[in-house]
Amino acid sequence: MQHTALSAASAAFFGAVLCVSAGAQSFSTSTPVGQHFVMGTGQTLSFPVSASAAAGQSVQLTVAGLPPGARTTPVLPVTGSPASVSFTWTPAQAGAFVIVFVATNQTTRAQTLCSISVNALTGCQGSAATYGSGCATSTANVPKLTPFGCPGPGLSASLEVSQAAPGALAVLLFSMAPAAIALPVPLFPSACSLLLQPSVVIAASQPVTAYGGSILNLAFPPGLPGYTVYAQALVAGSSLALTRAVAVQVR
Image (cartoon, rainbow, N blue to C red):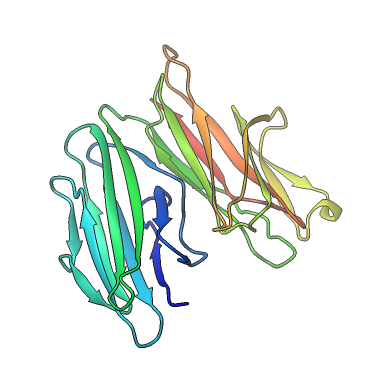
């Protein structure tokens, strides 16, 4: 059976892609699905989108719902195999947006739709930065932890685990202070450190999808003055791994 494959990845942010297919479509393991962006106005969202078909066939890539100021390079529609563009957008105003990329197989007319939802917020003063080193699995893979969102009082930030083993469990740990505590080697395939104070709290847990990603959310109570929280993700599969840590400034 012929098929069209659509893949998307984020450079400035990672995630926010929900893909729906008509018929037997397939996706590359690099395609993040079932996620959405929360970002501040003035921040830049940028990612490539690429669609391909079976040998000897081509795909037309189109888009619907492109918000004001957003652009693709080259301008859509684009036909080829692969058919690839770069999407860039810096929202100037708050709002909820849905952008739908459509890959149409020019031979079978089968389609794959990939929708990206963006919630742009104003007044984002918080920030996040990674620190320390992660711990590899038995296959020498270190999962990534990428922050995005609007960390402010009464708001939330999302931390995405990526490059993890499908089916593993991603557990988000957080603390009010950083640390560097060596962990026993028998628990991990290699030397490893917990980058949080021992009084850690489990904030969220989610299974890793077939695409190697999982979104974990941190909600911040309203009315509190500025502060910093520290987060690190444990990935538990056939072996244990830890991501680098993230310091999230809530402002």
